[in-house]
Length: 140
Image 1 (cartoon, rainbow, N blue to C red):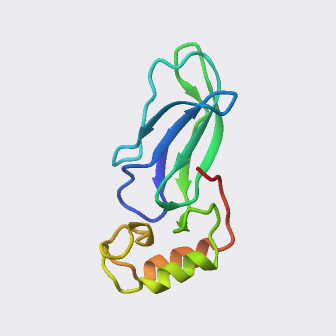
Image 2 (spheres, one colour; image 1 turned 135 degrees about the horizontal axis):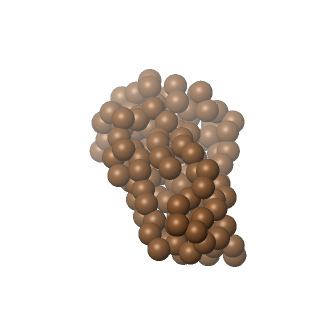
Image 3 (cartoon, rainbow, N blue to C red; image 1 turned 135 degrees about the vertical axis):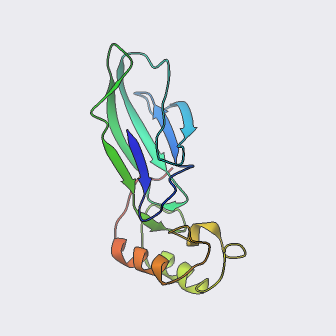
């Protein structure tokens, strides 16, 4: 399985949680720069993977671990950019936060406003909010 941030070249630091059937976190790790991750010593069974990243909508998906410890049918997941305030929706508050920091380098602008990771809050970040406006996802 591979994870990626929408419209970013570096996919390091995406939080990946392995959740049990009751929703409890069994293990948590972060992705490497290429978006890869690997849990070890996970017993056979059905779990949920929950993914989150700063300024992006969270996503979760069920997975099954088979007898040899491999995750079956996990695929590729892209976290949608634009949830700058972490409320689980890309809305006017997110656009306003981008607008309030427009043209400002990170830092002093908040990291979550630089959605494409280029070091400055600019039109590219605003376009990402516009493209994903109205989407919602899992809260972490």
